[in-house]
Amino acid sequence: MRINQLKEGKTWTRLANCELVEVTPPLLLVGIFVESDRNGILYLGTEKKHMDSEYMGSYLTGMYTWLIFDIVNDTRYYFYIANTIAGEVARTGIYTFKTPK
Image (cartoon, rainbow, N blue to C red):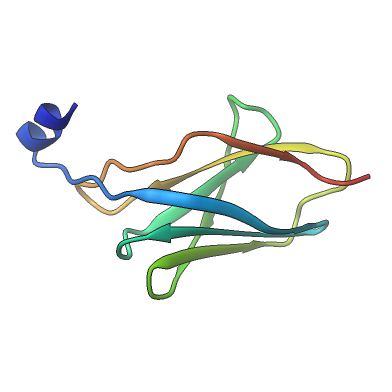
C-alpha cells in the first residue's frame, strides 16, 4: 500500500479518535482529530452500503467537527469520514450508532 501511494504521488493523513460528542435527535455532533485541513466530509446513512448524505466538516486547529440537525429517534446510522482534497486518500472505517427512542 505504501509503495502504491508513493508511486501515485498521493498523501495519507491520519484520521484518529473520532467521537460522537452528542446524539440528541435531531442533533448529532461528531468530532475527529486531524493533522491539517484536508476538506473532510462526513458521509451518513441508515444503511451500511448507502451512506449518501454528505456533510462538510468545520476545521479548527487540529480537529474537524460536524453539526448535523436532521437525525431521527430510534434509528441506526452508519457513517465514515473522508478527506477530499486533491491527492488525498485518507478515510476512516465505518462507524455506527443508534439514536435513543
